[in-house]
Image (tube, rainbow, N blue to C red):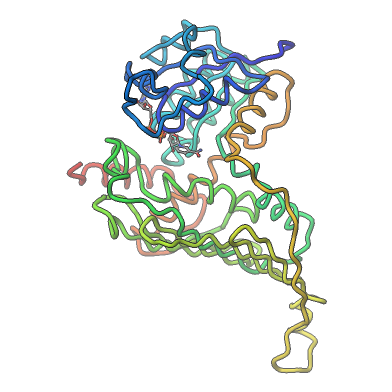
Length: 393
Ligand SMILES: NC(=O)c1ccc[n+]([C@@H]2O[C@H](COP(=O)([O-])OP(=O)(O)OC[C@H]3O[C@@H](n4cnc5c(N)ncnc54)[C@H](O)[C@@H]3O)[C@@H](O)[C@H]2O)c1
């Protein structure tokens, strides 16, 4: 393509879609070509065309409502794909719709940026990816990106590059305590699809943690096996998980811990990665490297002292501070990939990994045993079907 802007359609003008609309209007390399929400009033109310606005949190600073006046609107997604002139589509509907909506776009050669999680379970994620690969035979430049905007945040990028550069040496442990996803009962009661097996397919792991699970595998790679301890509806009147403790083992011997909940406050977001050359700790916007003067493995093997660890020093690591949530960077990169073939920050095919870890934790908790990755997608799909069938929701 040689045009300067990519024509973008957005489906799902809810909490997230509204933000995407604003970014697509504001970015220099995107043009808002069409909007779709099955709820016809959603677009007007989201942009506070009503007085008073139905959703008081929706602000129209920047006059977006006026700038939407000429944008084509649809209540049916397929009609948007067929009726609007689109280069790409952003899918911001509830999770279960992501695969079919992506596949409908691929069949038409329309590029896709899909919200997280790319799918609810690995069988569906694989179906999307297979469909994408098949569509690329006819549309060789087809772009498939995922909204993992935390990959643009400076501290995660710095941690990833330090690990990739070998600063920590052999990795021993990666522990993520991520309990600052606090949500109230009213949050869970706010949308019909939320926090049910049928509507959302999971809880804190499915809704809040796809970012963290993606970052985990992006930074230290995929675990080989997982053991999950999961509580369903422990802190809220919901049927899905709101508290999780997971233990991972990696082929390289590294172990991982992933602890999360929406039921704790104040919460913690502490990522600690230990390697032979020291320990990297991110917490409270501070990244500290406790750097060993020599390898702890060497110290274990060679020291004549029974107790002495290798000496270390504490280094404050600088990184580019986060100024926005970063969604606009992913959208800009998506358009750049469409227009100029730029490499993607978050290829959606990699979104399979966070879904796989999620499903492995739930499957393990259900079976009360360690599970190997990749898990059997059919087995997880059957478990989810059982949860849905047993649900009164
Ligand atoms: N990346 C992030 O930071 C982030 C943050 C929040 C939500 N999300 C993701 O965004 C997606 C949407 O979440 P949300 O909180 O905006 O939900 P929401 O319920 O606020 O909005 C969803 C919208 O989709 C519309 N919709 C549903 N089915 C549709 C269909 N078949 N056709 C057209 N429109 C349809 C609904 O009417 C609603 O307006 C989810 O996948 C969620 O995980 C991502």
